View 1 (cartoon, rainbow, N blue to C red):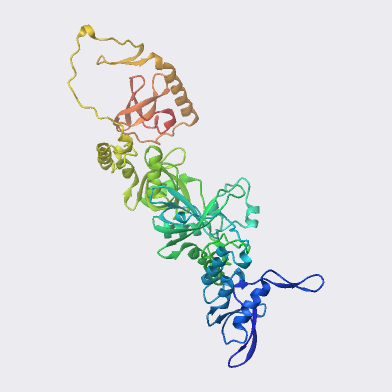
View 2 (cartoon, helix red, strand yellow):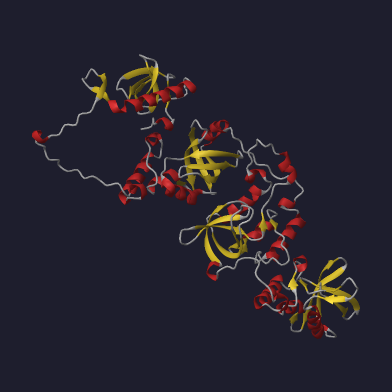
Length: 557
């Protein structure tokens, strides 16, 4: 029953009926025969209110209107009568009118909590609607390393572990039914970019939280449901600001509505409702009548290569880290997604290093080229730190010979030497060999190890080249794969500018077949190549061979 009192307002003596804001007491109702029947503790609640308010001078705060009824708080000399009723277990909080309470909804919630814990009156059979949370796990701090979407974060704890948490009582933007119906089944959907305001919600949290230390208070644990795993739902604050309240206040999330007996909700639920009401009134974000912003995802990466190459360094956001050297970038200027390759890296440690340093950070990229799969290749900088250099310095990557032509080659070499000296990560098991004088063996004790070989080339300097017979089948298979690839995807004349030392695929003039080769000499438009599997040498003009960037054939050595 909504608690009502009748009062004369002084000094005007206006007669008013006031419904108490924020609470509800047990009801009096009529049965089928017309007799009045009371719910448990209804009479006691009425008596409790009468003996404290009837014929007494009290202070009435008018706070709102509902169906032509005045809503307000009645202050007894000993306090708010609504708070006293809650504390004694004669009433429960109701969400619909809690938003107008001027004395602070938190006081009413706290009073109700006391009655629940003591199992007083209407709460005598009370059991929590969710699992209890251990006090030691209730509060913790950590650094935000990822914003999963509009309501979920990944926090790195002090012990180095990672914990995924969800914002309590918050509902992120969702796809409307009419939009879902119009989406073609063949179209690949990307919720972050396709759902209106999902990207804006993620961006709001990313800019406010990534890399920042936050305080986390666990409000409730949502058990697994409909195939979704268990969720740890929390109130997250940074600099004293409730992140969920700020998000809802911008119109970038909604507030979940609960059953009245469901206490598994945010500890600041009323503030969330008030923030949502403000956003609705100002028509912000999801509540706006304007068209939602659109974010494109263009798969044709090749059309962006010339622009990105000419741009030098371009601003980007790291959306996803696939490995230590492969990331997914969003380019705001072009509103497109691209895959970006940095350097060869090793293992889970490299991925975690790149993830913590770069994920969802604003970075700069310097594009140099693109591979056959449409992946951009180049350098990535986060807060002026060269990621390739950082990986090598940490012993999580090695310097590839292709870096010789880059302006960062010397710095990479120094970083690799430092990593080796510290025995960092992949260098930890490398044993340095000391140069020692080898004793001269007695020819009589010399052991001879015969291997079957096939001589493939004899040079004018009496040098000869040979292949192990046992490796013959593997080499033949490799040649078949190479030639099939060249027939399927023939190189375009002039598409590659050779440089001395490059590994490439080249045709041999005698049989016009493709073989693995190394560029030995470049003289104007003539190139001399050395066929590494056979030892012979050939000279070609530009356009008759192609750079090798197909790692699956094992060309890079």
